[in-house]
Image (cartoon, rainbow, N blue to C red):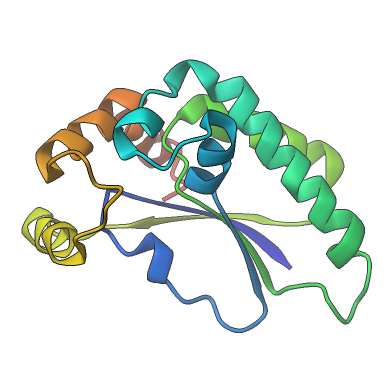
Amino acid sequence: MKIVFLFGEICSGKSTYDFGHHTVKLTVSNVVKRLMQSDDREVLQNSKHLDNQIADMIADDIWHYQNFVFDDVHTTPDYFVIDGIRQYSILQLLEQYLQKEFPEIPLEYKWLEVDKDERKRRFEARKDPKDTLTFEEAEKRDNELGLSELFSILKEQNKI
């Protein structure tokens, strides 16, 4: 099994990226929705100050999977995907947790790069009710959360 951190800008294809049949996917936005008790993108993108709580909830979710899935060779997935981290601080906390709790499981990092015009086309085509911001506003908020900084750090560390 591998744990994969899947990153990308809004509408880059993270939610549709296919790792195959034996995959468990944990989407960070779902964790943030539970924490903030909202589906509204504008509300969710105001979560930068909650990075420790978000990381703790993700670690707790991983722990629950470990207890019920990882221990049985028949149910252990090929990939455990953590999709949509926007802040480097969350990634650091999860890396520390995973290296301590599961040192034998390799970590992999994947950044999905898609042209801005294509991402905007996808955003406008999906007509999702949770998209209360324009594409430009949502993209700006993601970068304010730390996505562009995260990209730079991962590139600098040769992880992507």
